[in-house]
Image 1 (cartoon, rainbow, N blue to C red):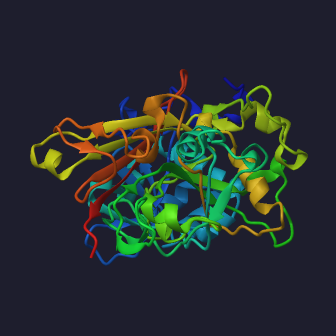
Image 2: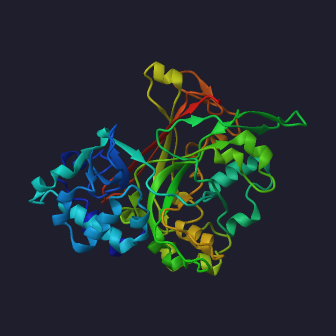
Length: 441
């Protein structure tokens, strides 16, 4: 474990309790040590969307006037930014401003806050809220941080050389599309595209037959950088805002035909799903770990290396995938877990990804979204997509209903969840990212 004691404060205290009872239950994803943010309004209302903080089964409405008398000057400025329908300005304000709001809200929500009756009007039940995409996402870049994913997929196509030489030298990524980023709960229509079967010389235009999920994390950028000014790896954390769950859907048969030589296009641009809650990097501090490369691998080039990244560049964010078919739902069968893995097993850290992304002078902007790539681990049950889990469809998984799946079928619901836990610290959650596959139109 990394020694992160110098990075912690009273908001991480395991013994911290809230006057909201549900936040103190061991299985609550939103204890007082978490305080993730989303953009919400009451379901079915015409209220403006605004920022809110999760605590127990409630949302703290950041637009509620009753909060202001209990906030410090910096936190009041933060609330004015975070209570808007898009969090871009709050993201751009920087870690110090964001940290001040987290600190003040932690104080207000603690069990020993004596003026709690004066802020209860700010609480909205989570189950009475609807959510929206939290920022105006200007750019989306998706990476390939897991060498286990790269190796498992690569050996299906290149058994003798599954991981290409460049992988160990730079974080491989591609530019994605933002208009088709969808919030959890939005159905996913089966895409169409050109497909070429192995026994045919000509492609056809048809609905995807090998639809897949990819269990990832989404990283929102905070303060950006000017065009032409790379972000040094030692300064990356000043530019990070928070983490959500991300499912980067993939049409494997469309991709296998179109991706050479420029990479995925229609196979990825039809949909990317994200969860509504963003967990701050301040909340993630206790779950940092040392980052080490396997013995014999090349050392990262100087602009992708730092002592701090070696000491605590990895983050133990665990992510699981559950599947529920239409038949399972009809027979009241619970979703079945397909995989569980951790971002700590990634080959490339977030600091390395951002340093690489900007190393050519590329300017990131507040609200931009970075995908981690499929978070697979070394164990068979840590394969975080069906392409890996079923070995390209050759070994379908058997479900409790007796059904099998090589790839997703219409009516299947994919549920991603994520959490962090460590002895001596609270267990915090990210909520979930779920979507149901619909038939192609």
